[in-house]
Image (cartoon, rainbow, N blue to C red; front, side, top):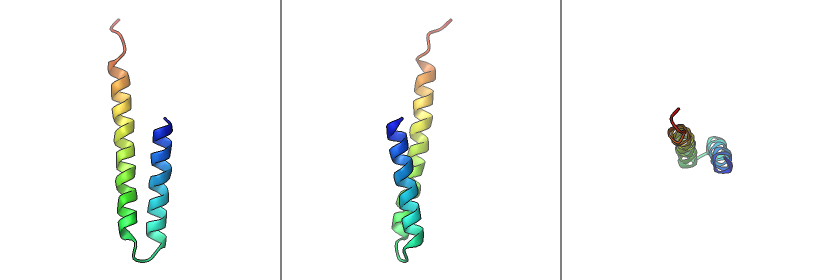
Length: 56
């Protein structure tokens, strides 16, 4: 969960810096990609947890 929070904060910071500073759209695109990776990590983690439950 710590990795999720670090990726989320870093992605939001990069998007904010990329939007605020002129000529830095690459930072904004990296931030968006980082947020997408963060969401994929969260989805994979939830799928991995749901498949580990024992059958009843």
